[in-house]
Length: 45
Image 1 (tube, rainbow, N blue to C red):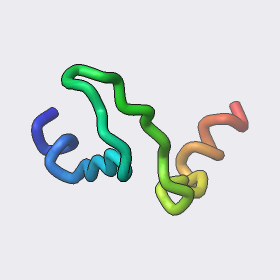
Image 2 (spheres, one colour):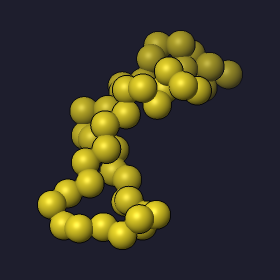
Image 3 (tube, rainbow, N blue to C red):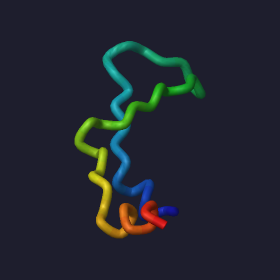
């Protein structure tokens, strides 16, 4: 789990935020991975 969070970059924006204010999270467009052949083989069953 720690390895997954090491690669996370948080952009808080330019505006001020209060402590413990929730940050809206968005996935970057390039993070979408194409379906692998293995997953398409499993769906054929």
